[in-house]
Image (cartoon, rainbow, N blue to C red):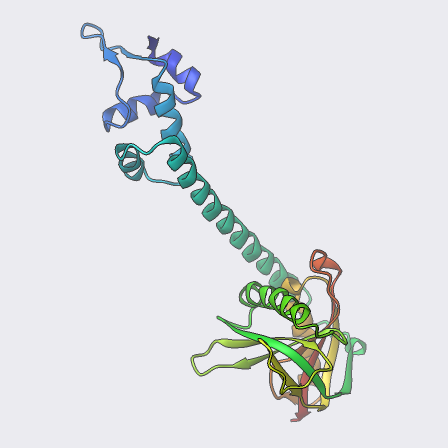
Amino acid sequence: MFSIGDFARHGRVSVRMLRHYDAIGLLLPACVDQATGYRFYRADQLAQLNRIVALKDLGFSLERVRTILGEQVNGEELRGMLRLRQAELTAQIEADTARLRQVETRLRAIEGEGQMPATDVQLKTLPAARVAELTATAGSYGPDDITPVIRPLYADLLDRLERAAVAVTGPAIAYYENTPDGSVLVHAGLPVAADPGDDHDFAIVDLPAVREAATLVHRGSMDDVMPSYETLARWIDAGGYRATGYAREFYLAAAPDECDAWVTELQEPVVPA
């Protein structure tokens, strides 16, 4: 038998926590001295304590912990639940990290307000292009909505092209369209020299030439693209132009595992205002 203090030390928890677990009936002492009120625990109760702390640390409420333990789940079932919860928390951390990165990007854009390096923007004609593409819908045009959609599209498209023995003939081109419900239709395209009439599990479309587009080369991850888009917008406005749709993204260098080394030309169609 262990006193409550010794049991707390072996379980790496506080005495106060053990008293709370006793009070709510989650982990009762093996016995209580009726004369002194001192609590005593058995060594085999450490296994129960470990389950309680692991579930609590993974974000389960104590009420949910009580339900799980009351269902008498075995070790393998418990490990499965913990792995699932761990995956959920990891995804939340990644989402929060991405959100913080977007905040930092917008702060940099705010700090750069009033600066307009016009020499970085070029007005050019975009040639027509034939691309194989896959599409999906994103909640908005923001990087935190676009990135989780477009990356799997390109991975899937490359696999399909390889199975179909269709060669890629140039850098990737992404473009976007509004949808009636306010979301954004994402087109992930790769230039090909294939017949649109062929029977494939991807679309082959011809992108029309664009007479005039304001273009700007963005270097780095597309998660950090907001300042570049703001520079492009200020140039368009100051130059007496009006954008006629979302910019195409022409990926000059885009290694999947080296996002910070990407080089992307932003190509926004414009007309005189």
